[in-house]
Image 1: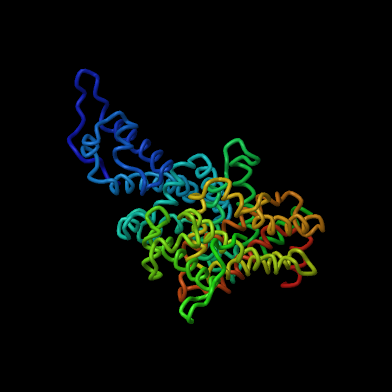
Image 2: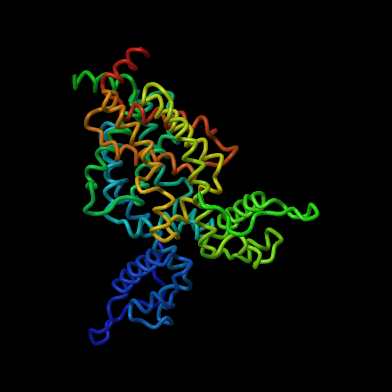
Length: 219
Length: 219
């Protein structure tokens, strides 16, 4: 995790907010401005104006607009990853865990539309090495999905002809796409979307053994 | 379909290409330039330079950069839609047709990465009414998927608890997402991707009746 640059915060007469608080505010405002204007069109001046700061004061925290995009994108990626990793790192049936991960990812996306949109739209604006730094050399996010599918396949719960990487990319596509069409208060709740997508995926990859049990159980 | 503006083409001394050919070339070059630089950063000057034309001559075909984006995006949307509609408008089992539509859509996306990327990245750069004009008031593209799922559900081939619109959006997400990770000559062929995604979707939404038959058939 990148830390904000500059000296440690001092409270002077109660007027100055602690550095961490200013930093969180800066990331939130930058996310909103990148969302509204797009990264290319947004300027550090826009962000400073929104914060009621002088543009020069931003350099206390970052060195460039790219630094800020990197921090915005890192923050949302880290948050989403921690949500799904917590659901993946539990005991028990890997298919059940995959189901929980899918539901968690969909709900997190629906509840964080603005940062998710900036992440998915503007990741390509970062240079390749910083993009890599966000995603992790092993594509940590994709890896959580793929790892559970591989494990379930070894246990005979996923069909042998399913390619785990391709399945993980399918799941990520279906679930990430939500950011393009989900509207709070619309036809579907995040819970409904998460539940149906998870059900489709589990049935989509489950082995005949698992499916037979499901079909028999519901007959 | 929008037609290029201006007078009809005349061949003068064999030097001037027919209008339709110039138009197709303009759309192709504009697509490439929007892909490489992004719509915001790309200029009509860049496009004219690439075509070896004067910038002023572009106004023979279009009135603005936005017109050009609209035409680029309309062209790729129309092409993709005709691919999937041809596969949807056949006789027989709607689940089988859905499978064919998914395979066709994935293969078309993989083989048209540049225009698809411009379509998916830059659609939001169009004003709402032009976006609507491209997609159709009934979301024609999504409608092909949803229509087949609804039909299959009426015939008892899709589980009653599947929401057809949500299922269609899941399928479009998984299949559109391909544009972000597919690389020609990479690990997976378009055929392999299309086949696995279609299989996952069909099993994911199929009714117990259909699944039982599949499981029994493969046992």
